[in-house]
Length: 184
Figure 1 (cartoon, rainbow, N blue to C red):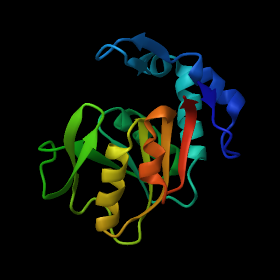
Figure 2 (figure 1 turned 180 degrees about the vertical axis):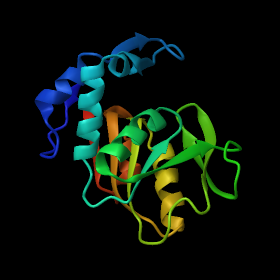
Figure 3 (figure 1 turned 60 degrees about the vertical axis):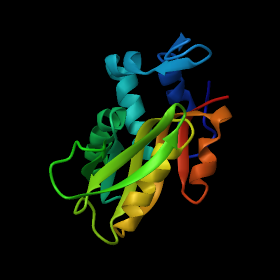
């Protein structure tokens, strides 16, 4: 794992995050190396660096930070606070109580659906999408499509970690994508 070379991000600071990501081989299936971020979240200094660096990735101004279920909630809400922006969750199907719109997408191990409240963003809102890991890009792309369909402008997609070999960045080629950590 290496820090991004994006000028908005402090690579030396990101090394604190890298040092705390736990790698679990053969989870959830043989051949997969799971990137466990819970040690980063448990270390207050590393967590603060993570939130600050995700906020630094944003092209300003930002009206809304969108966090993608579930770890995107953990990261996105404090990023919204740092940026003095609102926070909107994008959830798995059936989890939101009000009128929603949804998108189906493919992921590494099957398919899924994400939803957002139909009134969560308004036309012209400048949005930062935050999540923990970019793998195949399906979840992030579906999220961006949802927001765009509501008239919001997705200005930056910020990921803690990108698994480069899965080429998820190809799904987001038309967005400003910043991944703090690149894992080949």
